[in-house]
Image (cartoon, rainbow, N blue to C red):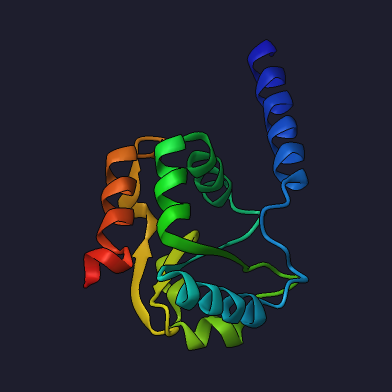
Length: 154
């Protein structure tokens, strides 16, 4: 009985915590956010890193937290990419934007799309390939980020 009570308590706490997460904004204008990122990327010689997911998605939250907790990954990401988060949820699926990005949702969530500084899609990343165990793998994520920088592609 104690185990069941603890399991229920843990489930409730997890659900409340995930419900309070505000990584993705369902009200954001994703198309405009992406265009703004392309403009900045062109000016700064970077690529655009689009992270697509939802606040409802545990792996989306894990990816966000993983990136922000690892200073090396966070630095490489922000030195080489302009980051945009695109929401996918019941409130706003952003299907028009996803169609223009060649339907990356087919890989599940979260999914990452890399655009060059002209807005051309150059890669879609199934983030399941960046996982290890119950989280993300630093070596895999670093390799991915380094392989898709504007410098690596040139």
